[in-house]
Image (cartoon, rainbow, N blue to C red; front, side):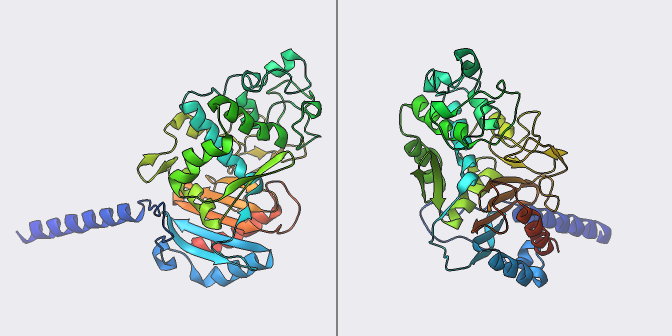
Amino acid sequence: MRLLALLFLGFSLFSCSQEAVQADTTMYFPPINASNWETMTMDEAGFNAANLDDLLAYLELKGTKGFMILKNGKIVLENYFNGHSQNSYWYWASAGKTLTALTVGIAQEEAYLDINNKTSDYLGLAWTDETNEQENAITIKHQLTMTTGLNDFFFYCTDPSCLHFKAPAGNRWAYHNAPYTLLQSVVSQAVSGNFKTYFNEKIRDKIGMNGSWISSGYNSVYWSTTRSMARFGLLIANEAVWDQTPVLSDQNYYQEMLHSSQDLNASYGYLWWLNGKDSFMLPSTQEVFNGSIIPNAPSDLVAALGANDQKLYIVPSENLVIVRMGESAEEDALSVSSFDNVLWQKISAVINN
Protein backbone atom coordinates (compact mmCIF):
# COMPACT_ATOMS: atom_id res chain seq x y z
CA MET A 1 0.00 0.00 0.00
CA ARG A 2 2.85 2.38 0.89
CA LEU A 3 4.44 1.76 -2.50
CA LEU A 4 1.15 2.47 -4.27
CA ALA A 5 0.74 5.68 -2.24
CA LEU A 6 4.24 6.83 -3.19
CA LEU A 7 3.60 6.03 -6.84
CA PHE A 8 0.33 7.95 -6.74
CA LEU A 9 2.04 10.89 -5.03
CA GLY A 10 4.79 10.88 -7.63
CA PHE A 11 2.28 10.76 -10.46
CA SER A 12 0.30 13.63 -8.90
CA LEU A 13 3.41 15.78 -8.53
CA PHE A 14 4.39 15.05 -12.14
CA SER A 15 0.91 15.98 -13.33
CA CYS A 16 0.97 19.22 -11.34
CA SER A 17 4.41 19.99 -12.73
CA GLN A 18 3.19 19.41 -16.28
CA GLU A 19 0.18 21.66 -15.68
CA ALA A 20 2.48 24.38 -14.33
CA VAL A 21 4.65 24.19 -17.42
CA GLN A 22 1.55 24.39 -19.60
CA ALA A 23 0.30 27.42 -17.65
CA ASP A 24 3.67 29.12 -18.06
CA THR A 25 3.48 28.89 -21.85
CA THR A 26 -0.13 30.01 -22.26
CA MET A 27 -0.34 33.28 -24.13
CA TYR A 28 -1.84 36.26 -22.32
CA PHE A 29 -3.58 39.03 -24.27
CA PRO A 30 -4.08 42.53 -22.85
CA PRO A 31 -7.63 43.94 -22.94
CA ILE A 32 -8.65 45.68 -26.16
CA ASN A 33 -9.91 48.95 -24.68
CA ALA A 34 -7.85 49.25 -21.52
CA SER A 35 -4.34 50.32 -20.61
CA ASN A 36 -3.76 47.60 -18.02
CA TRP A 37 -1.36 44.89 -19.17
CA GLU A 38 -0.26 42.01 -16.96
CA THR A 39 3.41 41.81 -16.09
CA MET A 40 5.88 39.06 -15.31
CA THR A 41 8.94 39.44 -13.12
CA MET A 42 12.37 38.71 -14.48
CA ASP A 43 12.61 35.74 -12.11
CA GLU A 44 9.31 34.36 -13.39
CA ALA A 45 10.54 34.79 -16.96
CA GLY A 46 13.82 33.07 -16.11
CA PHE A 47 15.83 36.16 -17.05
CA ASN A 48 19.22 37.19 -15.71
CA ALA A 49 18.77 40.49 -13.88
CA ALA A 50 22.52 40.86 -13.35
CA ASN A 51 22.95 41.88 -17.01
CA LEU A 52 19.96 44.20 -17.23
CA ASP A 53 21.78 47.46 -16.46
CA ASP A 54 24.23 46.85 -19.31
CA LEU A 55 21.35 46.35 -21.77
CA LEU A 56 19.46 49.45 -20.62
CA ALA A 57 22.57 51.62 -20.67
CA TYR A 58 23.33 50.49 -24.22
CA LEU A 59 19.77 51.19 -25.35
CA GLU A 60 19.83 54.70 -23.93
CA LEU A 61 23.28 55.41 -25.37
CA LYS A 62 22.08 54.38 -28.83
CA GLY A 63 19.14 56.78 -29.02
CA THR A 64 16.40 54.36 -28.03
CA LYS A 65 13.01 55.84 -27.15
CA GLY A 66 10.87 52.79 -26.35
CA PHE A 67 11.86 49.22 -25.51
CA MET A 68 9.70 46.28 -24.48
CA ILE A 69 10.08 42.55 -23.93
CA LEU A 70 7.00 40.32 -23.71
CA LYS A 71 7.17 36.74 -22.50
CA ASN A 72 4.01 34.69 -23.11
CA GLY A 73 2.31 38.02 -23.84
CA LYS A 74 3.10 39.55 -20.45
CA ILE A 75 5.39 42.55 -20.01
CA VAL A 76 8.75 41.66 -18.51
CA LEU A 77 10.54 44.88 -19.47
CA GLU A 78 9.10 48.23 -20.53
CA ASN A 79 11.51 51.14 -20.62
CA TYR A 80 11.40 54.62 -22.10
CA PHE A 81 14.33 56.95 -22.74
CA ASN A 82 15.20 60.36 -24.10
CA GLY A 83 11.92 62.10 -23.36
CA HIS A 84 9.71 59.31 -24.70
CA SER A 85 6.80 57.81 -22.73
CA GLN A 86 4.22 55.07 -22.85
CA ASN A 87 1.84 57.44 -24.65
CA SER A 88 4.35 58.86 -27.16
CA TYR A 89 3.99 58.03 -30.85
CA TRP A 90 6.92 57.09 -33.06
CA TYR A 91 7.23 55.94 -36.65
CA TRP A 92 7.63 52.29 -37.67
CA ALA A 93 9.42 53.13 -40.96
CA SER A 94 9.70 49.94 -43.03
CA ALA A 95 8.81 47.77 -40.04
CA GLY A 96 5.27 48.81 -41.03
CA LYS A 97 5.59 46.82 -44.24
CA THR A 98 4.61 43.79 -42.17
CA LEU A 99 1.28 45.45 -41.34
CA THR A 100 0.59 45.67 -45.06
CA ALA A 101 1.66 42.05 -45.60
CA LEU A 102 -0.94 40.83 -43.11
CA THR A 103 -3.59 43.14 -44.58
CA VAL A 104 -3.00 41.65 -48.03
CA GLY A 105 -3.42 38.16 -46.57
CA ILE A 106 -6.74 39.14 -45.00
CA ALA A 107 -7.96 40.63 -48.29
CA GLN A 108 -7.06 37.38 -50.04
CA GLU A 109 -8.84 35.33 -47.39
CA GLU A 110 -11.94 37.43 -47.92
CA ALA A 111 -11.70 36.75 -51.69
CA TYR A 112 -11.05 40.35 -52.66
CA LEU A 113 -7.78 39.45 -54.36
CA ASP A 114 -5.39 36.64 -55.17
CA ILE A 115 -1.68 37.27 -54.69
CA ASN A 116 -0.95 35.18 -57.78
CA ASN A 117 -2.96 37.57 -59.94
CA LYS A 118 -1.15 40.22 -61.95
CA THR A 119 -0.96 43.64 -60.34
CA SER A 120 -2.46 45.28 -63.42
CA ASP A 121 -5.74 43.51 -62.63
CA TYR A 122 -6.07 45.98 -59.76
CA LEU A 123 -4.04 49.02 -60.81
CA GLY A 124 -4.86 48.90 -64.53
CA LEU A 125 -2.42 48.86 -67.41
CA ALA A 126 0.44 51.37 -67.54
CA TRP A 127 1.03 51.53 -63.79
CA THR A 128 4.68 51.19 -64.87
CA ASP A 129 6.49 52.35 -68.01
CA GLU A 130 7.14 48.74 -69.07
CA THR A 131 5.60 47.04 -72.05
CA ASN A 132 2.23 45.41 -71.45
CA GLU A 133 3.87 41.98 -71.59
CA GLN A 134 6.54 42.91 -69.01
CA GLU A 135 4.04 44.61 -66.74
CA ASN A 136 1.48 41.81 -66.87
CA ALA A 137 4.13 39.40 -65.64
CA ILE A 138 4.26 41.23 -62.28
CA THR A 139 1.98 39.76 -59.62
CA ILE A 140 1.00 40.85 -56.13
CA LYS A 141 3.26 38.09 -54.85
CA HIS A 142 6.20 39.73 -56.62
CA GLN A 143 5.39 42.93 -54.75
CA LEU A 144 5.27 41.06 -51.43
CA THR A 145 8.62 39.39 -52.08
CA MET A 146 10.56 42.33 -53.60
CA THR A 147 10.94 40.53 -56.91
CA THR A 148 9.01 42.77 -59.34
CA GLY A 149 12.12 43.25 -61.48
CA LEU A 150 11.54 47.00 -61.51
CA ASN A 151 14.58 49.24 -61.30
CA ASP A 152 15.02 50.25 -57.65
CA PHE A 153 17.05 53.36 -58.51
CA PHE A 154 13.94 55.50 -58.01
CA PHE A 155 13.39 53.96 -54.60
CA TYR A 156 10.26 55.77 -53.40
CA CYS A 157 8.70 57.15 -56.58
CA THR A 158 5.45 55.38 -57.53
CA ASP A 159 4.77 57.39 -60.69
CA PRO A 160 4.75 55.14 -63.78
CA SER A 161 7.60 57.22 -65.20
CA CYS A 162 9.83 56.02 -62.33
CA LEU A 163 8.99 52.32 -62.62
CA HIS A 164 11.41 51.02 -65.24
CA PHE A 165 12.17 47.48 -66.36
CA LYS A 166 15.36 46.04 -64.90
CA ALA A 167 14.77 42.28 -65.06
CA PRO A 168 11.87 39.89 -65.71
CA ALA A 169 9.55 39.61 -62.73
CA GLY A 170 10.70 36.92 -60.32
CA ASN A 171 14.30 36.95 -61.53
CA ARG A 172 15.82 39.71 -59.37
CA TRP A 173 15.46 40.49 -55.65
CA ALA A 174 15.81 44.16 -54.81
CA TYR A 175 14.53 46.00 -51.76
CA HIS A 176 12.30 48.55 -53.47
CA ASN A 177 9.85 50.75 -51.63
CA ALA A 178 7.71 51.88 -54.57
CA PRO A 179 6.19 48.50 -55.54
CA TYR A 180 5.61 47.83 -51.84
CA THR A 181 3.79 51.15 -51.38
CA LEU A 182 1.53 50.32 -54.32
CA LEU A 183 0.30 47.23 -52.45
CA GLN A 184 -1.86 49.59 -50.43
CA SER A 185 -3.40 50.86 -53.67
CA VAL A 186 -3.94 47.25 -54.75
CA VAL A 187 -5.86 46.54 -51.54
CA SER A 188 -7.89 49.75 -51.90
CA GLN A 189 -8.92 48.83 -55.43
CA ALA A 190 -9.63 45.21 -54.47
CA VAL A 191 -11.91 46.04 -51.53
CA SER A 192 -13.40 49.12 -53.24
CA GLY A 193 -12.51 51.21 -50.23
CA ASN A 194 -9.75 52.98 -48.38
CA PHE A 195 -6.69 50.93 -47.36
CA LYS A 196 -6.33 52.72 -44.03
CA THR A 197 -9.98 52.14 -43.14
CA TYR A 198 -9.74 48.48 -44.10
CA PHE A 199 -6.53 48.04 -42.06
CA ASN A 200 -8.08 49.71 -39.02
CA GLU A 201 -11.14 47.48 -39.18
CA LYS A 202 -9.35 44.20 -39.83
CA ILE A 203 -6.23 44.58 -37.67
CA ARG A 204 -5.76 47.76 -35.61
CA ASP A 205 -9.11 47.85 -33.84
CA LYS A 206 -9.35 44.08 -33.40
CA ILE A 207 -6.19 43.92 -31.27
CA GLY A 208 -6.40 47.25 -29.46
CA MET A 209 -3.62 49.04 -31.32
CA ASN A 210 -3.55 52.80 -31.65
CA GLY A 211 -1.82 54.85 -34.33
CA SER A 212 -2.35 55.74 -37.96
CA TRP A 213 -0.80 55.77 -41.42
CA ILE A 214 0.79 59.13 -42.26
CA SER A 215 1.40 59.86 -45.92
CA SER A 216 4.34 61.99 -46.99
CA GLY A 217 5.35 62.30 -50.61
CA TYR A 218 5.21 58.86 -52.15
CA ASN A 219 5.50 57.06 -48.82
CA SER A 220 2.99 55.97 -46.20
CA VAL A 221 4.40 55.28 -42.73
CA TYR A 222 2.69 53.95 -39.62
CA TRP A 223 3.02 55.81 -36.31
CA SER A 224 2.00 54.40 -32.94
CA THR A 225 3.03 53.83 -29.35
CA THR A 226 5.60 51.21 -28.43
CA ARG A 227 2.85 49.11 -26.85
CA SER A 228 0.92 49.04 -30.12
CA MET A 229 3.92 47.60 -31.93
CA ALA A 230 4.16 45.01 -29.16
CA ARG A 231 0.48 44.14 -29.62
CA PHE A 232 1.08 43.46 -33.31
CA GLY A 233 4.09 41.32 -32.44
CA LEU A 234 1.97 39.32 -30.00
CA LEU A 235 -0.63 38.75 -32.72
CA ILE A 236 2.01 37.39 -35.09
CA ALA A 237 3.63 35.30 -32.36
CA ASN A 238 0.25 33.64 -31.80
CA GLU A 239 -0.21 32.73 -35.48
CA ALA A 240 -2.41 35.74 -36.28
CA VAL A 241 -4.95 34.80 -33.61
CA TRP A 242 -5.78 37.40 -30.95
CA ASP A 243 -6.77 35.55 -27.81
CA GLN A 244 -9.18 33.07 -29.41
CA THR A 245 -10.25 35.25 -32.33
CA PRO A 246 -8.48 34.71 -35.68
CA VAL A 247 -7.45 37.93 -37.39
CA LEU A 248 -6.19 35.81 -40.28
CA SER A 249 -7.47 32.23 -40.49
CA ASP A 250 -5.52 31.29 -43.61
CA GLN A 251 -2.57 29.43 -42.09
CA ASN A 252 -1.11 28.73 -45.53
CA TYR A 253 -0.65 32.45 -46.10
CA TYR A 254 0.63 32.96 -42.56
CA GLN A 255 3.29 30.27 -43.00
CA GLU A 256 4.29 31.55 -46.44
CA MET A 257 4.61 35.06 -45.03
CA LEU A 258 7.14 33.93 -42.41
CA HIS A 259 9.21 31.55 -44.54
CA SER A 260 11.55 32.05 -47.49
CA SER A 261 9.32 33.41 -50.22
CA GLN A 262 11.66 32.94 -53.20
CA ASP A 263 15.06 31.45 -54.04
CA LEU A 264 16.96 34.72 -54.43
CA ASN A 265 16.99 35.96 -50.83
CA ALA A 266 16.37 33.12 -48.38
CA SER A 267 16.09 35.58 -45.50
CA TYR A 268 12.98 37.33 -46.82
CA GLY A 269 9.35 36.26 -46.55
CA TYR A 270 6.35 38.41 -47.41
CA LEU A 271 7.88 41.72 -46.25
CA TRP A 272 9.26 39.99 -43.12
CA TRP A 273 12.96 39.36 -42.42
CA LEU A 274 13.93 35.82 -41.41
CA ASN A 275 16.87 34.76 -39.27
CA GLY A 276 18.68 31.44 -39.29
CA LYS A 277 19.04 31.05 -43.06
CA ASP A 278 22.23 30.15 -44.91
CA SER A 279 22.40 33.44 -46.79
CA PHE A 280 20.82 36.86 -47.10
CA MET A 281 20.65 39.97 -49.25
CA LEU A 282 20.38 43.57 -48.09
CA PRO A 283 18.85 46.75 -49.51
CA SER A 284 20.84 48.69 -52.11
CA THR A 285 23.06 45.80 -53.16
CA GLN A 286 22.86 42.66 -55.26
CA GLU A 287 25.49 40.87 -53.19
CA VAL A 288 24.53 37.63 -51.45
CA PHE A 289 26.07 37.27 -47.97
CA ASN A 290 26.64 33.96 -46.22
CA GLY A 291 25.08 33.24 -42.84
CA SER A 292 22.18 34.62 -40.81
CA ILE A 293 21.10 38.24 -40.74
CA ILE A 294 21.50 38.34 -36.93
CA PRO A 295 23.96 35.63 -35.81
CA ASN A 296 23.52 36.42 -32.10
CA ALA A 297 19.74 35.98 -32.26
CA PRO A 298 17.76 32.72 -32.14
CA SER A 299 17.57 30.98 -35.49
CA ASP A 300 13.76 31.01 -35.59
CA LEU A 301 13.54 34.78 -35.10
CA VAL A 302 11.38 36.73 -37.56
CA ALA A 303 11.62 40.49 -37.68
CA ALA A 304 9.94 43.66 -38.86
CA LEU A 305 12.82 46.05 -39.52
CA GLY A 306 12.65 49.73 -40.38
CA ALA A 307 14.98 52.60 -41.15
CA ASN A 308 16.84 54.18 -38.24
CA ASP A 309 16.62 50.95 -36.27
CA GLN A 310 12.93 50.46 -35.68
CA LYS A 311 12.78 46.83 -34.58
CA LEU A 312 10.09 44.25 -33.91
CA TYR A 313 11.59 40.84 -33.07
CA ILE A 314 9.53 37.68 -32.58
CA VAL A 315 11.00 34.41 -31.31
CA PRO A 316 8.23 31.77 -31.59
CA SER A 317 10.14 29.01 -29.79
CA GLU A 318 10.43 31.18 -26.66
CA ASN A 319 7.15 33.13 -26.89
CA LEU A 320 9.16 36.33 -26.99
CA VAL A 321 8.19 39.65 -28.54
CA ILE A 322 10.76 42.46 -28.40
CA VAL A 323 10.27 46.05 -29.57
CA ARG A 324 12.84 48.80 -30.04
CA MET A 325 11.82 52.26 -31.27
CA GLY A 326 14.07 55.28 -31.50
CA GLU A 327 16.68 57.25 -33.36
CA SER A 328 19.27 55.61 -35.59
CA ALA A 329 21.67 53.67 -33.38
CA GLU A 330 24.73 53.58 -35.60
CA GLU A 331 24.33 53.88 -39.35
CA ASP A 332 21.70 54.86 -41.88
CA ALA A 333 20.25 51.48 -42.82
CA LEU A 334 16.87 50.67 -44.33
CA SER A 335 16.45 47.39 -42.45
CA VAL A 336 19.17 45.16 -40.99
CA SER A 337 22.07 47.03 -39.36
CA SER A 338 25.09 46.14 -37.25
CA PHE A 339 23.06 47.36 -34.27
CA ASP A 340 20.86 44.25 -34.49
CA ASN A 341 23.69 41.85 -33.73
CA VAL A 342 25.21 43.88 -30.87
CA LEU A 343 21.77 44.47 -29.38
CA TRP A 344 21.02 40.77 -29.49
CA GLN A 345 24.28 39.98 -27.73
CA LYS A 346 23.06 42.12 -24.84
CA ILE A 347 19.47 40.86 -25.01
CA SER A 348 20.71 37.26 -24.92
CA ALA A 349 22.74 38.00 -21.80
CA VAL A 350 19.47 38.99 -20.10
CA ILE A 351 17.00 36.41 -21.41
CA ASN A 352 19.35 33.43 -21.09
CA ASN A 353 19.87 32.66 -17.41
